[in-house]
Length: 190
Image (cartoon, rainbow, N blue to C red):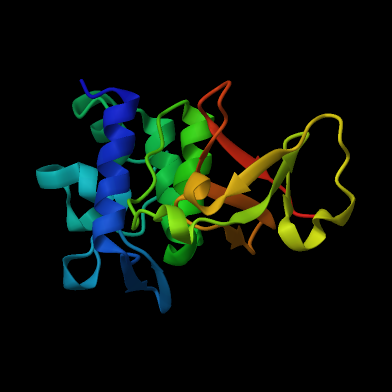
C-alpha cells in the first residue's frame, strides 16, 4: 500500500516529466483525458496503469469504477488523486509547481522544488525582506518596521525565483522554508 507521500511523489514526477495536459475531444469539447493523444496521461490515468479502460473517458472520478480501482485495488489516497486530477484539468501547466506546493500543504507531504543552478556567492543579492510572514520586495522596502525584526531574503535562499500565480494572486516562493516549521511560506504581495 503506497503512502500519501509516495503517491504524491509519483504524481509530481509524472507531471514534471510530461509537462503537458492529457486532453481529448469528447462530445465536441476538448476535455481532460485519463489517456490522451501522444500517450499523455492525467494523474489518475497514470496511476491506473493496466487497469485503464477506454470506457473510463468522460466518466467522473467519484461515481465510477475508477474510484474503486484507485482506492481499493491500488490503495492510493483517493482525495489526493482527485486533487491532482482537478489541478491537471483546470490549471495551466506553467502553474503546476505552485499547485504541487499547495497540495503538499493540504495533504501534509514534503514538497521538493525543482533543482536549479546554484547561485555563486558573488552573484547573490538581496531581493527583499520577510516581516510578520509577509514578503516585501526590495523596491517597496523603504519603510520597513524595526520590530518585529525583518528577515533578509537573498536569491540563494529562494532557489527558484518567485512565481506569481495569476489564477489566485498568491505569491509563492519555491524553496524558501520557514526555519521553525520547515514548511513552505506562502505570501501575498502588497
